[in-house]
Image (cartoon, rainbow, N blue to C red; front, side, top):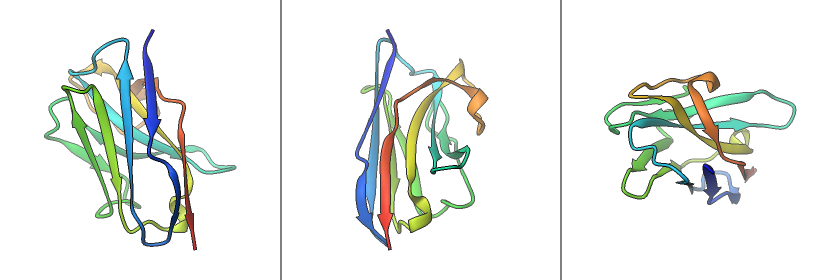
Length: 125
């Protein structure tokens, strides 16, 4: 059974930092892209960042460019999201996701087939 488990969420003040982790079990995603999405209360799930299977290509939502960094560790079957200069509008449940097809990268939810359960990030003003 494939499981993606996020960790690292929490409460932080404006301007602070958090590092989210997502570890997969049940299969390897070495040849698949990883992505992070977020969903604020009453809003749709939005793309945050993605990284290619090789780690050489990354994409970011405009709202997080320059503040967030996505990375991966294929040996650990894991993906990370380093978040800095956090703002109240970053408050949301953050989800990691693994690509649905190997050797492809995308920025929409339909590009990803396996999802974690989410971790809450709350940024206080």
